[in-house]
Amino acid sequence: MAQLQAPVGANTKKTIVGRGKSSKGRFCGKGMNGQNARSGGGVRPGFEGGQMPLYRRVARRGFSNYPFKKDYVVVSLDMINDSFKDGETVNLQTLRDNCLIKGVDTEAKILANGEITKKVVVVGL
Image 1 (cartoon, rainbow, N blue to C red):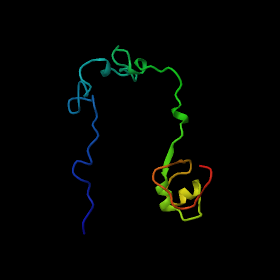
Image 2 (image 1 turned 90 degrees about the horizontal axis):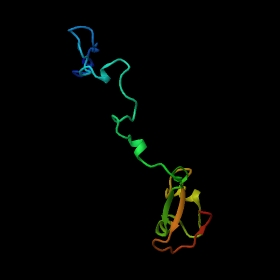
Image 3 (image 1 turned 120 degrees about the vertical axis):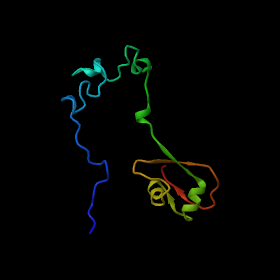
Image 4 (image 1 turned 180 degrees about the horizontal axis):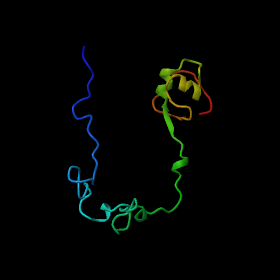
């Protein structure tokens, strides 16, 4: 009967650094004695060595409407013609039922691409 085994190299011993010659000694993989080799050393996030950081170089003036924008799904007349029968009502719920739009918060716009040959009732899009 076969036994499950981990692949070669999957289980390795934890490397203990800076504890004598048998481990990663002396510089412990941190390079020579610089700022990043010290305990508590290093620079804050976004620091670029004295160069003006990116978050200060990029202008942040004015108002952005991006968080409040609405995404609309485009529904063409051809799609409505193929998915609905004569006399049916076209609204957001029936568009969802016919898989023309997805999601609860999705809004739709009907564009005049193609032509429609059926009589349908369009309600509040």
